[in-house]
Image (tube, rainbow, N blue to C red; front, side, top):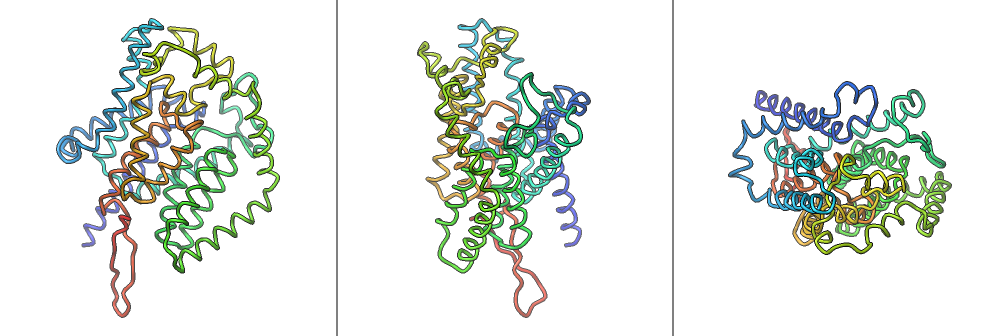
Length: 413
């Protein structure tokens, strides 16, 4: 028994370390210049391909026989991406060879079949995500106050913008995912450790001041409270969360006011980059481009991307709209169908919270074509199917009165 427990614990540590590095590679190690110079631009690609090779070599039945139905949305998503290659060729003259190299960045979505083969548990995901959140905050502080020369800033970009606490690096989506996992665990087992982890990650999100993430987090909390049955735990949870929110609002009222004022100014400002992006992407174009998108155009093929970026227009800024403009309706519908299924079927709060985040981020953050967002989508799809398995969730230990033993119960819901 001890030997089996030891092997399981050793495996868990290996999986947690691998997941942590997968998260770091998804954000290119926060684009820190000394690190990226060491691992090069293809470091994440090499890491993913090697993992894929070993998984397929040693555990191919996990894909082909056991869980082939899990890969249906994976294949549909890639079908839509591949079809967008043809508008890129027809309207921009981007060859299939050039598209192969340009579309290579979608390799991060291969994390989903890797997850199927490795089978990480909820506990292993949560541990890696929480560690990432700590490293994320420390890196933000390090870059802001000690090593600003470790990052590359644009010509008109300031290290710390007005109203910010520190320089925000890539990784906001991963931190949001860490909150989802931590909050889900706190709901299942309310103790000081789970509560403090949830509070810490929420504090990081607030310090980052990403409005979409904060709104999604608040809706997750409201949804979880409304869906809980009346009990002592619900009363305690509502009381604690209410006190924390009240204290944070009182002591940070200036920051909330700044966020609200900034949001109003941007919504009604025609020169705001997102408003310009919406106008551009909803402009008239040929009907095949509405269905298949314009494609992922390389800057070496056409100057349109550079021109748009100089005008402040970025596809990633407008979420699903930017994704639809580039890759058509099939990838967008694939993700939306999975979100709808999450609420239509008896899924866990973990799955529903991920769906809330995606649906709230439709106009801004739900753009699945870059490293961390593709990894985020891979985790969502894996959790969507895995929460049906009792082995995915960490059991809660319950002491039995009068016996020196511990019994376990499943937390599949």
